[in-house]
Image 1 (cartoon, rainbow over the protein chains, first blue to last red):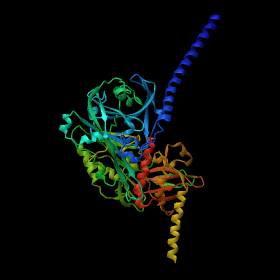
Image 2: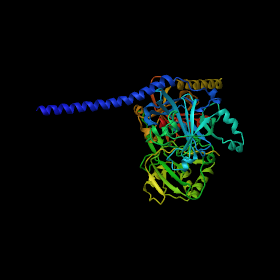
Image 3: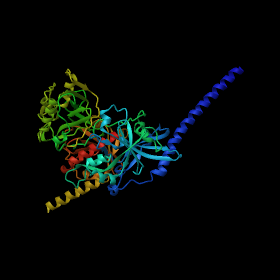
Image 4: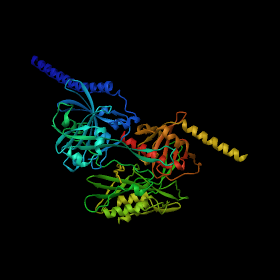
Length: 479
Length: 136
């Protein structure tokens, strides 16, 4: 009995010990994060972002707009032998960053920047913003090691240090807007003779002005400014150096938060950010200009016809919906059909949504109106058919859409479903499509087309889905 | 005199409508499939992911609206779901058409039409805010 009680005591003691140890470790980790956050809020965040007037002289245009750390997504990481809290950053206004070595790629600032907080060798907390801009070599290579440029700045945008990663080595970079800018105008021969390389990092902002004071809203692209880096001839080891986290340490920072960590794990945007087209498409040819017509395997092309049936799963041409109010009012929903054009390549994806609508409104009694093309990136659907195409088919369809200038919308013979089917036919793609009928008229309709797609036999290169997946416009181009 | 009275009263109606919109608050846009949006009851809105619409940006559109006659209606080809609170604290569910620049206040059983010149920007404004919901 005594031995039994001793055994029980031993078990109890072990449970208490390991529980306390776990709590101690957990508390210790939360202490680190709390202390880092307290340091940031007390000593760093008090610095106000630069005003717009100072953008001309700002060495880092990214501080013009407000930004805040996303603490609940912070990750503690061991980098260069130090405990580092790696924190994603939320920007009040998103903008893009690119370099003259990025191969024309743009990166959203919140995806390539992280706040890193750690204790330096003297035990003092440091808060640094690490921004990584991959170059073209990163994408053409195996992506196992980072290639590009890394900026390390204070929270208020003061440059601390920069590194150029190339061919597995890191070179320190001197960031000097004024000095480098004066050298930029020098001849290439003079620069090469003096062993000078210049890197240009530029920041872009895209926005839309709704102000009623302007007759037409407009998109604008604003270059926030460029920094110029002079690449020195000195090399630095990829391991942890005496300065900060070292070039190798910083290269692993971006991959830490939200990723598996270790090495340069920056996740580039798979397609260039969209310069969003108008919701009402003002110029369809401009809207579709980023597609590239090339035979062969470099690009894969597809079109998806998406159907939003008024009554999902039924051929009903109308959905008489009783609204959620107690009034019992009816809304007459006829659904919608629209298209998604997609082009995929190793350099990214270009995707555009397009649907045909009346400009104002139609009814069975008044079925005609001026037509217009809209960006349907926000439109839900309940069934879709995707067809793989060659470049010839794809561009025949695009040309049909692009040439559809100011057509008349007609509820019976030229509606959204007619438009989608005729577009497919322009690329020699024919799918079963039934006519529906309704009081005062009849024609192609989303209700019938949805069921035709659901029941059709799929040809090679076709796939069908009943999942309403997000389908944003993707890809931009500078033409 | 009759013409003058008509013009005066029309101006008063427009002014009254503008003042009514300015008394509305808590405009929100919701992330929901349009078929479900029509069937959604107002007291369920609080469970749906949403984004608040900026009042300063919204008011010029609302102030430009005209009211459709009760007998007028349109066919819906996709909609956004929104809501606002009126001056008495009542919640209004609003269906916003994806085309045409019209929207429907279910509590008031009234269609409104954004001014033709602002229709394009209105649809852009709504679409841009809808895209924000995904990023929250």
